Image (cartoon, rainbow, N blue to C red; front, side):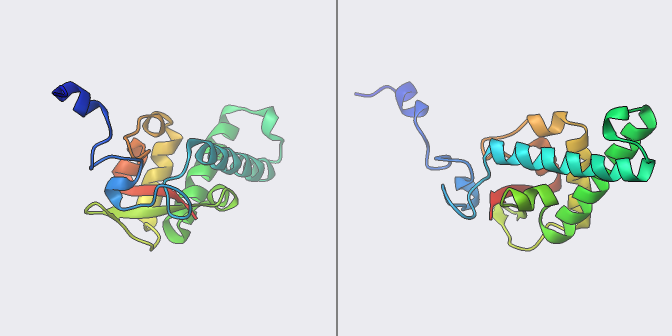
Length: 153
């Protein structure tokens, strides 16, 4: 007779892979994005915001300064928030073949998440900590607060 602790260690019907509970496929299009792709998309967006800040401030990114950091962060939050809200993903998401979908009542939808969700996500990602605390479906606190999930396009 198997012990109850042995039965509890394997996958349950509720959780077999990230996104299962939300009706997403395990692999391929529509599956939950991997950490590598998400990190690369973030780095691309951060670099693009830095390049724009360099043009606006009239000096290179590596020159730094607190005013440059504020401009860089503001541009990052604005560009990623607006693009995610209205288009379902930032430039980095597009390059990495990712999409941000809204999650409502345990179901995902194909429409973009909306401006408020996009801005909320971007602001929380800017704080970093919400992005590194996540659940079994690879949804960080920023995704949970904005009620979104990042999937492969």
